[in-house]
Amino acid sequence: MQAFYSDENASGTSFERKGFQKMLSDISLGKIDCVVVKDLSRFGRNAIETGFFIQQVFPEKGIRFIAINDRFDTVDGITDLTFDKGTGIRIPITNILNEEFSVDIRRKQKASIDTQIH
Image (cartoon, rainbow, N blue to C red; front, side, top):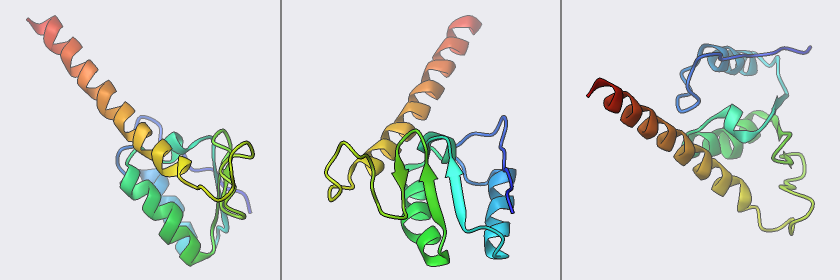
């Protein structure tokens, strides 16, 4: 079975997104054995929770996780074929940068709105 889960107009900083919660429900029902995302930032922009799902929840449930543009696949742990397979540190750093990017964007948006009001 193939299914698509979408969270349009929902922030990736929260995992309380409708599509994400539906995906988790389907995982609990045993309907999913692999999650494929365009890149890690599309999965989530909260470094701790993103890491928790990738490193704890999915392995416990036997779920393979693939982030296409980040060249990451939990089937063998290869994070990028151009790097040493043993490092594995690029993914947590990418998650932190994704989270910081969303914080920076929110700060800039608020500053822009404040400037327009005054």
